[in-house]
Length: 161
Length: 469
Image (cartoon, rainbow over all chains, first blue to last red):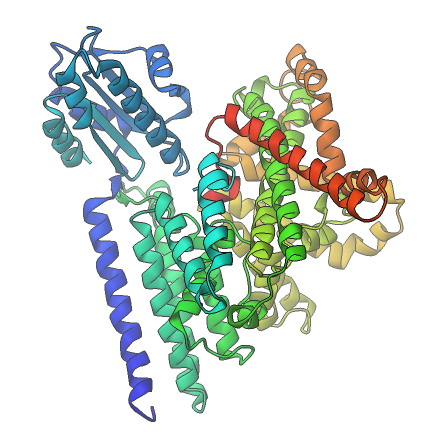
């Protein structure tokens, strides 16, 4: 190296490499999914649900509410309230490939918007729950919950991974 | 953000173009860079950080290589560092899950692992970064002093997500200065509209037919249905990917850039060697320039040349995805190309043209079966169905798909040959030269645009196939 400038490039490439490694570690801690089978994840999340007000829904209801076909994914667990005045629902999906993540999140966002539209005006507390809906993408797992206990369910989902 | 989305077509693109044309030349690169980062962050709000870090890393690596040009040993160490780090980052995101799954399958262990989604476009922008590093090392290009210009090269939104992979040496001058005129903008708009129509009218429609076939278990497919499925996929992937490339080239022109073509009517090829000169040209060129030739290319013994070809094609397969079927697909083409080069290539040239095209077509279609299959086992069952190992010769489903979509296939056949383009421009040439012809071209292209938009509005979410690579 001949002057100060070469040293900058030489040092900076290692500094940036260190930043990339740190970034990947953060991703692994906060964004990664896991290779756990869907059945195991489903069992963990299901055991934490308050099933008094929520009922396991058929694939046809999932299709009707989200416009998605359950068979296209590795696994789908969908719970929703049977009461028409309740916005409560919990959805756990494992997608088959990364490119399915966006279609599922887009469908969930559409569902939230449509439900808010339904509830605003005559059931403000339900619309409020929808405002606080949780949507988490961890690797190939997608979790969505509308409930007073949504944060608690999200924690269970995160720790199950 | 997809090119084929209402948000892109009616909000993002018009705003970016308007700002880009209004600002002075000095500010154009910055506008385009900001637009590109916004475009990427729209779909990848987290991974945009990774792309920015990759840009900064490669910028300094380029400077470091230049700084060591008087000392070949240190320059070599520096370039090796840069290439290895780029490949490790790509490898981590793309192959680490596949590697652990393979170990779990082969050994009596069950290693759990954390999955991360693949950052969109990482295979493309990493290859562009390596192109820059190697071009600088080989002195085919000067290192870019302006980090904003370098960032623009890596992140330029028209070709960021799915190529074409632009070699740095091809675009170096254009980053400094380029001409924008009404002729080029018009030409760009025409490319873009054709690409959009290819994607939303033909690729999505043939893709829907393919999905119908793919939902049937391979063992229950008749010969007719299996062939309709593979033809549909062949058209889907061609119109999807070449449509994206046309849109990228068109957008590039609108911003004053000239990208090389990525497809040149591959389905009219008369040999597999020719097919690969016409299909995904930028990827083949990248592998030829940065892997095949450095390995010795064909200026070596026959055995070494065969080795070089097989390495390149195994890597080409792996580049497409972390799965055994992609590796099998790459090796399959490696073997065929070696055979054409050393065994039957000369005999093939002596055959009538239609026979050569049928030969190429069958090999390419069999290749697509490996490509679209979720596993190697499925691809073998599907290939079995194509030769009668499924459920008979023909069935009602196959007949329905064929007769229900004959017009779509006719358009697809025309569109995948130069005849389709000649036909379109033949219609335009019916009008008198001058303003009449320009007006006719404008009306026809605007018509195609609105038909494509009509398809888009009624369609479901349909990302480009090459996004996953």
